[in-house]
Length: 310
Image (cartoon, rainbow, N blue to C red; front, top):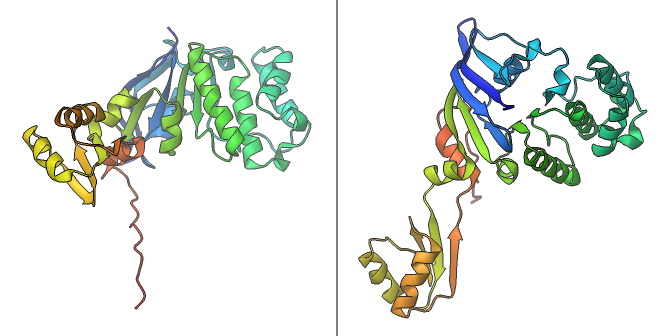
């Protein structure tokens, strides 16, 4: 089974432990979001997986082998870590051709990924003339070049326009649907929530969570229902009698925590209480992530406050 397996991985830089006995796996058939504050160890871990750095101890393997043990690694794993890494004086086509030759990938594949990434029309332009979004598309094309079973992408939507963001989101879902293992590092919580099936969250080099995304959110944030009724005086004692704690927000508007809309709707129907609005306030990945990583970030901003003029 093709997967990424990290076992007891540790990386020490002098007195700094960037990765601390880290273990997790990225399985085929799903997109795994790789999250954590700046300095959490995500980049170091990905570099070790890709053979760009050596671990102090532990291991990181792809289908049971280290990256450096593959003769033609682009056929096994495609990666985008830095869209600026391509030589600026080369054209996009020649950049991909060089990668293809080095891994014995057919030349026709170059034209295929140029089309897929939407940059075929600029394939003969020098890379130094590319915008960040165009470089990003080129980096994704390079990652796809060997038709690999494993993809590792660091901030893949960085610099992309809205059409590009939708494209990369659908691409990752499609790749996972084909049975590939896809690891995606991102700081964009809403975007990650749109494509990830599973989450691996780091903090100060340690594993904080390794769980399906929905389970991660539900375990951190309590569900809440929002409802509106003209008979709040009747509703409140009924809900209290059921062990719930309704809170009035404004005239006719109530919120109730630790409950689902189905239960509130059933109670209101049984009591004949009219309900004008009944909505489940779904927790977000961002809320759950911030709840988990509070105190784990090396750099924390002070939230701005609005000063009222006299």
